[in-house]
Image (cartoon, rainbow, N blue to C red):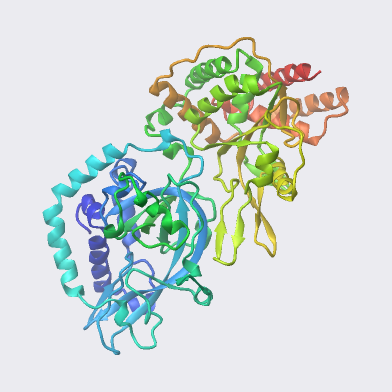
Amino acid sequence: MGGPAYDCLTNPLGAVRFSFGNALSSGYDPASSHGKDWGVVDLFRHYFSDESAISQVPILDLSSIKWVQPNTLVRFRGMIQDMLGNEFYAGAYKDDSTWRTNKYSDVSQFPDGPSSETQVWERRLLYCVPVPGRNQWTECSSIELKNRFLDLTGQNREKRARVDEEMTDSMDSNTLEAGLNGSPFKKMKAGEGTSSASECQLPMTDGVPQSCVIPPATSTDSLPCLVKVYDSPESDLKLNDVVEFLGVLTFDPNTMMDMDSPGDNSDDFYEAESVQMPSGKVPRLHCLIHRKLETQHFLHSSSLLTELKSPQMFKEIRESLMKHLTGLLGNDHIAAELLLLHLLSKVHGRVDNVAVGKLSLNLTHLNKESMSIFGTQLRDALKSLLPFTQSIPLTIEYLNTASLGPKKDYGTNRLVPGVLQIADGTHLILDETELQPGTLNSVGVENANLLKNLLECQKVEYDFQYYKMEMATDAQMLIFSEGKSNIMPADMVLPFQPSQVNPLQVITPETAQAWRCYLATCKSLSHSIGQELQQVLENDLVAARQTDRSLGSQDLSRLLTMARMMSVSYGETSLSLEHWQMVLELERLRKERLK
């Protein structure tokens, strides 16, 4: 089929062309296929069907871009920040009587002459960035990947050279600049695609088509990537999805600067962010296969995930994590219990405008002094436990000036990202302890409403100028404030009552990894309530309503969510009477503090 797996790694285009030749001999017709996959996807899925094989593929980032080679196989892990539509390209052409393909490459080739046959195919363009708020522990060791990749490259350099020579000897011809008369490729340069009809009508900006202008990346320490997708239904990938793309890397190494050298060139790499996307500054990845990522995929050792099956293991890890959280919170055990339930929450259903499963937490009685101790420690701890975390200061100045919601810029035909364009599963800390009296301007009011809507409905409003659209999301929200927050009405409010400041514990990498695996596994568990317990819950909720007439449907729904989280925190997929009673007792203690 394409040779050993490392051939696919170091010479993926050779495998593509080899399989194309096999498909032609089996009756594949480029003239009528419209670019439909001829077996390449299955070929690469077969070779990279397990984690050990995938782990040999370098991950594209600011470090690896210095040593990975063009036209080799790479992975890019990131969030889809913008969807740039489709582009046309010369997918196949006839060289004499033999069909050749340009699929999965930027450089389109075909022979001269008006009689040559060229097939115009289509591919999707996705602008992807590293996941906003991604924490350092989720990143693979660049040195380890580099050594592994260079070892493979060295082992197969001679073989790859022979394969490349065989594959490309018959493909030497002029690039698209020689174009066919009347072809949509007449003015298309090598390495570029032709935009769809609507994009072709866009005006120019300083000599650059506005369809090429891109928004700034999330930060200057992240590497964006233009991913070109083939043979995938449009419904398969959507905005803000976290995806791992495996495909062929193309970029111009001649324009890549030394990222370590100081001076004027230090900002050159990001010039593309405000101008266009030359392949030497925003790498392209021609996607062969992809998969959506969950938290488990960011754990470097998945062995513990398979071992976390017995309730005893869940209980032991839960106890050690609870001890850690309680210590960070000054021995406030109730706060630690509620924090754990909060960390395990996720939206698992939607009914009208209600996001079922969300569980935001507001810790009150915090000021600047206590935040500098407990808030800082807790923020650092969550960074070491969760894959994506961000902090937002709730001050008048920040709300009046920040760009929280994404906005469409029709001048550049791009979606300009906002702070709240985040991936599902992101944890947000909102610090209200430095909020001073002041007046919100129109931007501040809009930002406050955006945050409140995210908290209550788990939706973010995207501004498309002529209309606004709400996009569903799933964010855990933890609010620190002196009194009960009026800006962010959380599901659970608890006055924070630490009894002492504990010294910071040294956490071993093995322990931290066990906690991460525990949290990821608990969140992924399905859950149900048995029929025998449903009547008990119904009676208890009716009794609670009779005792406290202020209880509404949201309070009762919150209790059920807390029960679900309590159950999965022990590794259980079905609610037990013991865990339900633990939740009722925890709720009683929480309300006592509110009096």
